[in-house]
Image 1 (cartoon, rainbow, N blue to C red):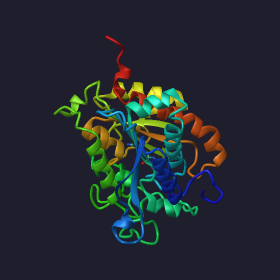
Image 2: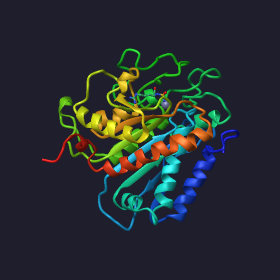
Image 3: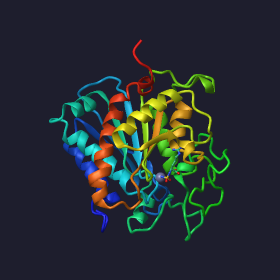
Length: 326
Ligand code: 0X9
Ligand code: ZN
């Protein structure tokens, strides 16, 4: 673990533990390379971007998908720990927990523990690194691009939604999807989920659209849904309100539209929802970046694992929560 924060696996430990899980549970999971970090792309060390895909391979056919990624912001310690603990629960409790067995049989869960491994490596030494480590921007001072301002949906469109100053913490990058991490995740999302939106923006997605995307951050104890780039509500707002409130029952967090926190453009959840109509939400875990392990283990993990389990269950039709039976 990280010195002084032993409950948080390092990047290497996370990859090793995930690879071991996939080897031990080979009928239930797969460890997949979906792209390269900025440093790997530029021959400066770096990492593969790796997804642990979890589903019972002996049960074939189309299954509703849940995609979760974490640690896009390097200094946020708790998110990757939570997604790794979720993977362990799904695989290690398969034979002993009927709920978990049902999920692994009838859902496809995709977990990208570390979306920003280059940045995370720096943050592991106690540095408050948020962005990736793209050396072409603000070298030696505050390097990198804020990956959660570099996605394509409404990139660089909103007042105060992102920054054009390369030393700022919310620097949006040179162009939409300029960063290999953002490009790899966007391509992966587009490969997982078909476009469920109607031709007009106000159409939104059908109420029974399957699929769900969670982007896990810290901190502030929030459950957030689109849009972030405008204070207009989305066409699926009643679905998001119902879903967000339900998730907040589990973790006790405050549910709200993400623009209510502050305006953001070029974020991951706005791509999944805005481009494809997929139910996409952001969690802000806990009350700190470098959260003490006792707080993670005694509060954040027990509060949030049930919210992830619930997400896996409702991924068949998350918006339907807003609408009672006929
Ligand atoms: O600013 C961010 O990217 C997120 N907060 S953090 O402190 N983890 O950096 C919040 C993003 C909220 N907006 C959307 N999810 N669209
Ligand atoms: Zn964050």
